[in-house]
Length: 166
Length: 102
Image (cartoon, rainbow over all chains, first blue to last red; front, side):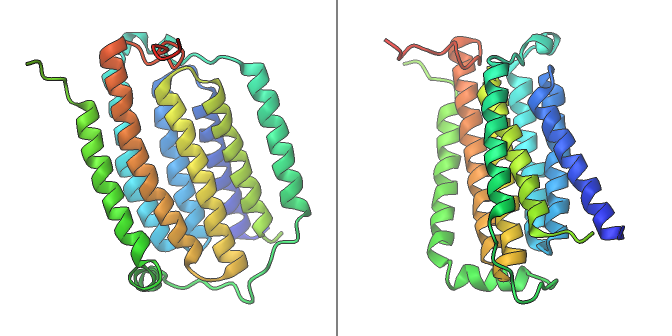
């Protein structure tokens, strides 16, 4: 086997194992820390696919931002002593049946569809191209994204502050 | 053995199913948000894989960046809502907050 194949399977194993930990762990702290493995592994998958800029964004925003936010929320909403009982699962058997059927459907679709193939598979730096596209074809979504982020920022502050009396 | 598009799509499907199971089975609101993050990550893997193997441009990567941006906004607002619920109900069990049910 080639080195690239081995690396892909190692990263995929890391991603799937930590995602399974998120889904099945009884302790919410373990679930939250397992997200680190998933997010970092997905960044590795992006590098494998030649998407260097997306991988950097994934590390900065997911690992540096969202994961810290989730850990803060876990710490703020639980007493550390009762984390054992705060991650209950319900409807395990129906959930597993639905998800199993869903995976079977997705797997059949993936393996039987003849996907289009690119003429050549390129590994080149993408940052310059992405920057050009953001200021040309994707200018409107780019500006809308800044408004969405501003609205989310204000909304989060309004929702999370303590209600003032009087 | 060559790594093909199918490998990445199957990986995305596995992560999607694990995230779906997390959303379906967890009673803790923060765990449900973690499941949503897993689902968004699996969608991103599909976008970038199709950009690499099928279309060849950077369009799929740009969609992935927009999804990451929206995930950040969703996490900020979602966790703020969870904190507000915790202040009022002193629990974040998704079955406990049923004031609007009647």
